Length: 113
Image (tube, rainbow, N blue to C red; front, top):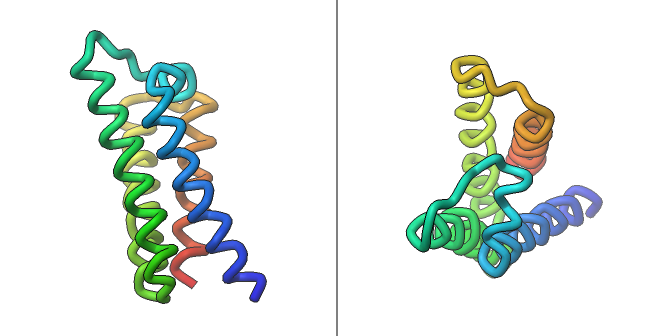
């Protein structure tokens, strides 16, 4: 029961991340370090960090199956893997990157259970 509640909480956090990115894309720059020049960049934030996160979180909640949580878990684990490699290769070990890496890894592992 507790594990299921954690998975729901992760879904909610995923959707909230998407909603913030969708409706306040310029706020995302402050945490991520992304810089947006013009409408095209804003569209990417709304789409990739907004719509994608909303869709993944909502789908996992609607279907409410072990496999859909695992799918979302795989997404988070791949994000953590790529971010971890990128932190080393790109020499980008800043606090926001470490926080994102840790969150993605923890979310991914929980969702895989």
